[in-house]
Image 1 (cartoon, rainbow, N blue to C red):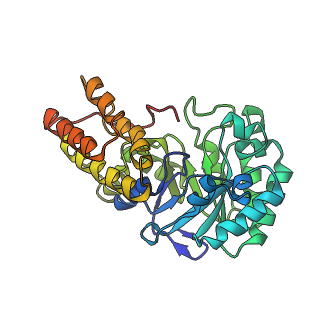
Image 2: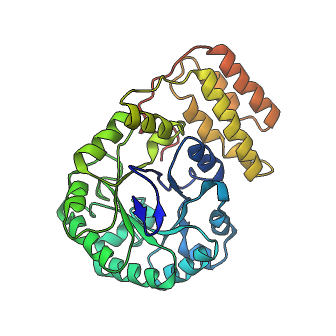
Length: 339
């Protein structure tokens, strides 16, 4: 599969852009375990052009994580075009447009999946962004606003015609948020459309190797994007690739192995985010790494309240000792912090 001239190989796996999740330390872990392409947390175009530090820092990309995409969202065409120019200067491989975020405060003002209520504006915004950068532009979107407006087959064609180089489709409408089961049938229809020439990437409810293979085989998508199932499980990319190559499931990780991964993740978080931020922002990840462990409440509370790096590492060692040999059930698709 190629996005313009970027060769991602056969059946590539993508890390979905997720606010407060896909920061540099988490991207580091996912790349280590085999993610073929990743995206930054999504960037507010209005905040970026106002030079907001919280938006500027999201443009930081690193050579080890390439190819990397910067994802932008907003509802004002001029702001999105200017933000595209600023993001282009950060030298990612791809500019991605977020037409999929269902969060109320974003969608209700016409950004993210809210743009699906105004398809002509959606297409015009995309056209102008394509013309504003020399980088390939991609789009992430949903099936439609609600069950009465699942026009993704037509929308995908129109976005292709104004110059995007790939499209990622989440198999739900905005009205569904993340409820119910993702419907991949329309994603398959987009891929099967003889007029489509660009890669089609499927997203939604891919929570393990068997599900990923099913989506590739049944719907013929060029790539699979994984979001919520990566929470506390960045090694899911390695698991999927192993299954695609061998037809066999990998042996589940022990808690001791997960502790070592969590410690590396923590070290990277401290490296990228000095002072206390690296500790504070790891707390949500610790909850995910060890979700479902029996009698874990007390240790979990200490992990998510400690402010000292050495104490956090000591607590992680305690987790490894207390649950030596224990293997957690990994079903993916849920998050203890409500995303």
